[in-house]
Image 1 (tube, rainbow, N blue to C red):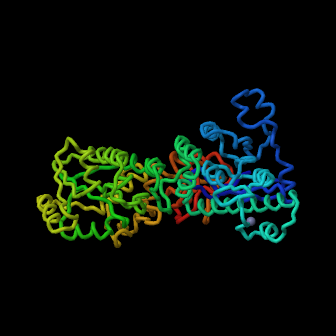
Image 2 (image 1 turned 30 degrees about the vertical axis):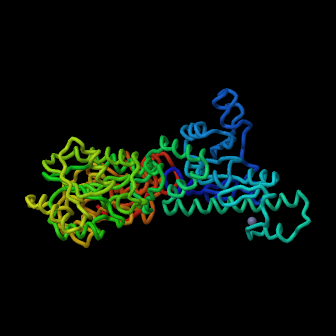
Image 3 (image 1 turned 45 degrees about the vertical axis):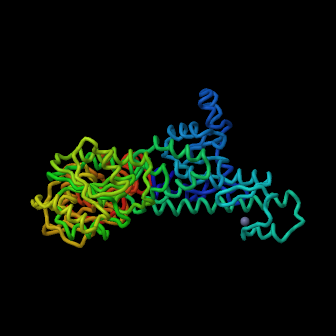
Length: 532
Ligand SMILES: [Zn+2]
């Protein structure tokens, strides 16, 4: 039985017991390790690679692996990216996935990203006998190596013994290659733990065009196993970054939830410091000009109405700023800016932007009347005067923080709660209080955390709720204790769990589908609990 402990998209950390041995996944099954012999002997590998399924389903049924504990994938290394993605589209992930004879330093990260849990060192051994030596990201022929640039036990022996036979030498290289694979798997584990695998994958994919294709195609597999809120920082370094789950989800959801109210709109450029309101430039502008209007911040690839700037990934992303915008970038950002603007009924649009940002606004709002106010820098006296002049007639107070809570709540829970309270705290660490704390901004994850009164309301509405069996949970709720879960819960979502006696707030570890389908594994981490 597989025991899920942590998710980062498809990638996961878990545990499985095979023949009395517990494997912490992702892991490498070492064919040269005596301890693994019993595990390996007990696995039914079957006689046909997975691809046979598409050639002749009847033959595949007869020859496929007969293995209840694992999903065995053989022959992955000979597939093209389209075939590979096709296989992953069909897989059921309730069992751990074992990709047989497919691990190399380059394939491990992308296969972990796609959801593979178990690898082996078959290729590490086979390649060693062909004289191929593994580096962290490359493979090199042993004859091209002047020395062994590694200090593992095997390499030490390779260095000190010049008279090794082909057999002895190959065996030592196999050991070294296996060590490299094990290190790679450990690295993936650390990245999953930090919810940071995607940033790494985007850089690794650049080392090989096929990996880039796999990464691009993997978009179509993305589903509720991806987190809407994460503690890691998004790096938008490559063209694939524009297609990230985080970017697509944020932009679509934010457009859906955006409810601008004011008659004028101010468009501003992004800042290196996040959240934007803590940046020098945005603070300087606000200290000199009274802003009582809706604001939209233009960045790349994000477009962020001010009300959403504390949400992940807007709260902490990083994007290389060169001042140069590609045509595709301008198109992409302009399209989204227009969609946000169309949500309002603005009688005036003021754009306090320059350079590439101005090009975005011009392309997005060709048929709108836009007043451009920046000249010689955003905070020059002239720019500030222009901006003040355009906005001074908008004096109706716009309560930004209150709107932020409303917008974030709608984005996160999909409903309007309409609870009002007093806003306390120092930006961005805000909380909403009415006698008791109602909710608070969780800056680490870029989301709202909720408290007793709000939790009760969510139970009434049955959104982001998990019904549990008759017990009082301590710090963890396991899938076996989940009776039902409302639709649409994704890992890291704030959820409210309840039974007849107790209720509380927790953080989902798996999707609601998994909570219901799995009978083992960690479903929710408990944050706080109350009695009814
Ligand atoms: Zn070594």
